[in-house]
Image 1 (cartoon, helix red, strand yellow):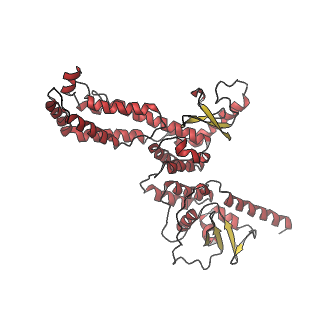
Image 2: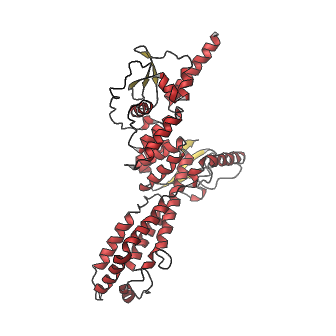
Image 3: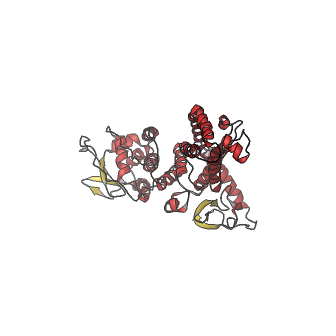
Length: 413
């Protein structure tokens, strides 16, 4: 081998190491609080290990190159090149990786014949999936994805939910993108919740999430409006409360006012902003029973005991089935899969075509703060601390019509 070939191989090896250190997808160092990392099981013999992996938080793990190479084409190609002697401990090369100790340990448990230990937090599990994708480990990624699919997925905080979505979109994890987007529905989409992690979002991902939340809000809103229909919707079991008819001159075939009041209040709340949390389907049952209880114990100058017996009788006969139907329809409206996430890959081509066209035609005068941004520059519109969406000339379907809200420029994409 010539001297030039040796130099080229050395350069390629260093380039591979730079990918390891750069953390092209996981950004795990942004995760502030990490659990204590227990040692690997004692029965896992690492005496013949020929490589040391050091995490971003300086924890060292002994591994076998052959195990890494068998699971990862990335490592197989890298080990086929002469390795630069940057750091050696106990006669073994030290490989610095951008992932923290929790993720590397989880990855090792997936590579060796020991019980796998995938992080419990959903955003951390997605970081593990991203690492598998980064190091070209399709079999390991499939195993991780399969284990995650058996879990009841929750996000303990809004920060975890939005970070999970950012990780999934940034690394092209399509199935997890939709799941993470649904997890964010339990939390308000405001700067107070995701402000510190805003830098983790791609501009298009933030826009897609705003669109997704608006669509789910509109679907739930339509669902509640259908509940007000006593002729065609599930509320047709109610033929009107006699007390409402006598006291307010209401029609006998109208929805009882104690029940219509529940739906009307929820509709009013939903219309305020799509950035608010979206109620869980089980919440409607609690509101229903609270309103029914308040109505049946009411007293007035009219024969309220007869009125209460009427509404309670309808509930006793069909109330449970009615609540189940309401919950089912709300769950369907809330859990719809967004086409934007399902077809993101083909949609990116349209964005690129649109952006090129906008770059070639920049003669028009800006008519809003959003249009005043340079092409390719991303801004976030906010009003009273509430995230409204992404704006800017370089985006497809930017919110140019939003008017004079303040625009915070995030920088060039």
